[in-house]
Image 1: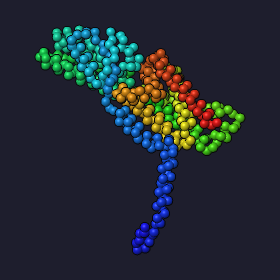
Image 2: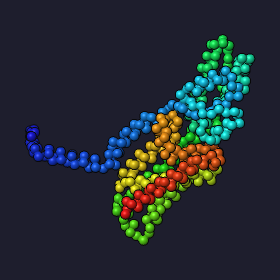
Image 3: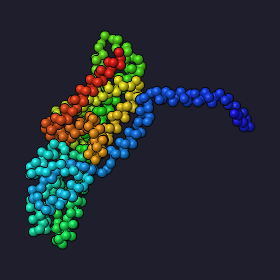
Image 4: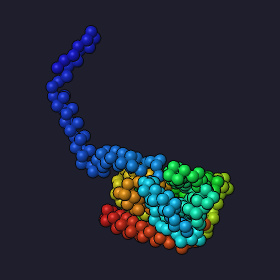
Length: 384
């Protein structure tokens, strides 16, 4: 097959196209043979479209709320029924008295409490006015504002319907109270999340790359034949990143308090202790990634795909978890950053006692133990 012009005449031999096809076939063979490469090429787009399609949403749905209704009359029941039917709310608890509200918020499972005044319907009939208090957890100011707006709209609609039925000018006064963050500062929400993402990336990604670098350059075998035991070699690679992470922890806390104005309302000791536990979990994850990869590029890609995206999308750092589909809510439970962010918000923003974060401490400790055991066993087997 020949082509010509005024200056050049080139001929391509029939065998050249066959050789080209052979090279293309060989390249496909190398790609299909590497399962990790196939996972990145074909699996990452699927994971990204699912996560970005379902996790990223500006809507707030299925938010857990509580009702405090001392009146229990026809007017309050009408409002509660409409709120219960709304897709934005999920009524999980009915309180007997306003004294339970503070304890309920410290447990961390409720986004808002709707508290009706006493003799609600009686006040509407006699004075034409009654009060409803909307008490929201403003550690996430965007979610709190959205919940208050949803509830206010439902109450206003109920008020209009009641006025049309009775031709009486009812007026339901809505009072809003924002707990823990009355100034509605965004820093209260993103500081715990950014802290978790920074520690995860530094510990997990950098640790995995550091260990894989030794394997990739062939120096790991040299280190293993030295008199030092393998466990101490691993610790020697991990300790610098642990110290650097502690330095970053102190830096972020100082900037949060003195620059961003986010107070440490609870125990600083327990806040640092929980943070160090999360650092330990992240280091164990980095060690696990190093046992699964043979190149720094693969370690970086896996760390970015498995750590950074879930931390940003499924940990509650940017988007409320309860608004996501149930499968993503279940997946979020295995992300360490989720439990760390919950614990930091409770200790740092809400000022709760350590008893309120025992669940998170137990979960993070269990994750650290399991990941470390699996990582060390796989590391030993791979290097033997």
